[in-house]
Image (tube, rainbow, N blue to C red):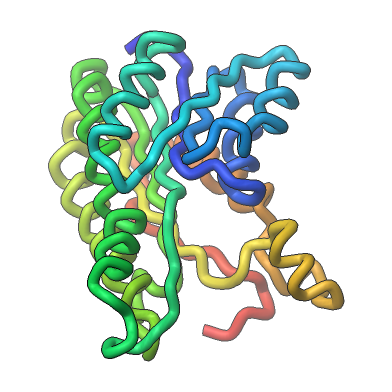
Length: 237
């Protein structure tokens, strides 16, 4: 493993960007992985202007070939990731009889299978080095399959199962795997635009979540967290 490299797959204007910033502040070279490189241009410039290293990598998490190519770029440019965060996802609300099979499959690949594809490209170097962190972003749907949420819940349930299996297999080899249940709406520009009168404290702060991800990575190996949930103080649960 080549040093302090963090890869974030699913860098959007909310949590993914906040996670990238947080690890960059600690001196990590950050791979900004998203479908379109232009969508991460701002955070890349921000990190580089602060003296850090950031690599924009076009990646379709639902396509194993795209994922393989993307991680080849990451390794060649900045090295093997010591930290991998899977933050990609897809959501389509609809009843069981309403969602077409193609949409259901696409959601599953984005919410779960993409994390499997990506993990196959980061785990070997982590296991060889005897250290590494894999953080998987879950949701309320990881624990509860609500009506009209099957296309989200099935993938998020699967992501949680993947985290458990991966932790049991690779934890003894020095790789810390954690699943984070995000229970509530994250404050993003789009969420703010849709609910302009909503008070800030009723939504999850991306920076606060990113701080928790950093803390998970920093945990001493005698006291690792496998799963935790995060929600605003006013969120009912």
